[in-house]
Length: 359
Image (cartoon, rainbow, N blue to C red; front, side, top):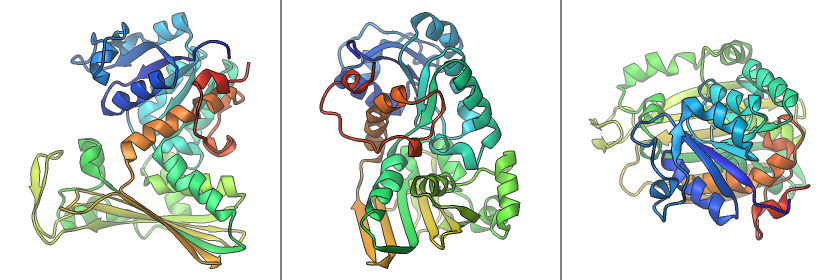
């Protein structure tokens, strides 16, 4: 592409500070921005980024459809919430406008095994209007591409075990509550752990109907199976509370979590495949105690046994950088909902975004 990539930002909260700056520094031109927060609407995006004024004012999200149809940017970056149900309207607006869109929404990475009806609907709409939809972020690389690449160094794999931890304080009150932070153990068991004994078929039915929202690893295991050519034959999830021996104050929840109460949860997803490889993946989201930090650990069982550990990843910044680096592949992809397992592995972009766009 012999001109700058023209981008729009949908959702101008914490993540957008990095997303918009990274877009500009990678040579994109931001032509529009949208939000629902009255405190943000009307601001220059430069004020949000913390730099000089850019001349692009945040518009009310209710006007996004009209503005996207008028401006026809090459891509819209959606950074709002974590489920497909939450971002369906934003993706629909983009698809109806014929604008490629990519989201930080965790479920959006591989929604085919959790929200198949919504995904099929968006896939058809995107194909009709000649655009591409996808999700990306930290899990795309550190739970996905990295694992697929490391698997390529193995002679034989019998199992893969993954674990990733993150501080719910970094992601807002909705996510903290969704992880059970602040609940007593009895409350956690009744509200979150009550699905732990379900069979694969039972939980699959609840997940796909939207009655039960699974952990991020539910989608990640689907992504890995698709990328690695594995055939899932069963998938289950259990959620167990995390605790601490002392009281912990949560700024996000505005409360002190008593010793022994739930600081968050560990969600463990087990996927058995027809090829004999079992994936056991765990995401641990909790209010951190002093000296705790983000950690990503994956072990391959087989020949040879191999463990990869990543301590203190800058999860927010890596989410944003990985997504921005995905944009050329998004634009180059065929129309439809194209999850990133169907795209080339991400790469570091040494040149402006547009130089990686075909056509």
